[in-house]
Amino acid sequence: MLTIRKMQEVDRHALCELAVAGSQSDFVLPISETLQNQQSSEDFHVICLEDAGLNSQIIGFFILDHAFATYPEFSKLGELGLRSYFIDSRFQGAGYGGQSCRLLKQYVVEHYPSVTNLVLTVNLRNTRAIALYLACGFLDSQKLYLGGPAGPQQILYLPLEQ
Image (cartoon, rainbow, N blue to C red):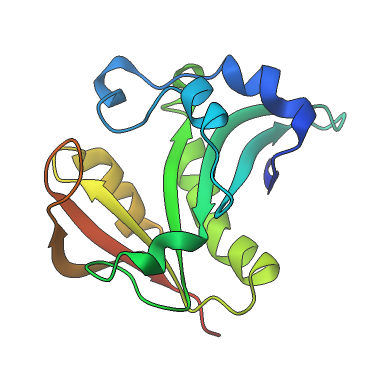
């Protein structure tokens, strides 16, 4: 079973053992760099795989960024940004990306009740990620963000209002 929770300080060591597949390295910074450069507007979260014995293993990570509204070209007040979302390369291909992505809406609604939309930008070359987000209920804004470091990015959003 997958669960999502806020990152705890004790998670840092396990997180530093996570990595994306080589083909994804253009789209996600190394986790050690992300952990070192956390901004006050960022909430770090982990994706955990739990077995029947309630043992938990961290298999993924993402950031919920409150500062996305400062980027008016793709976000507005009341929206929360999703960044650095990934599943460790050792666990990819088992459906955990889709499962955890489908858990996001309820998780964000529960923990961030005033947020209207979850917004993300995803590189146009990252077609697998785009397909995953769309399959999980994200909608295509039909707009591109051109300011990303790795090329044009598609802007997607997940409506959260009930």
